[in-house]
Length: 92
Image (cartoon, rainbow, N blue to C red; front, side, top):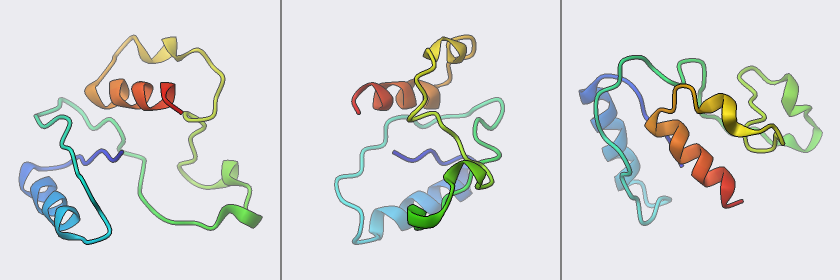
């Protein structure tokens, strides 16, 4: 799952580039629309070989997918992106 945020034109351009990339298959656009504020303004995508790295020390690290914390703290302001993340987390 990936969330793209930004201006409509920039997001459309990036999505089209991802769609044409042969490494990606069966893309499903789950939500498209305006947002009041960026949900993930401090996140970025990158690949890091974590075999010899303490991931918790990496900038932008989030334990969301492995945390045993009750997800209720996310319910106060449940954006579309957070709803999808909670569903994705529930299926792991």
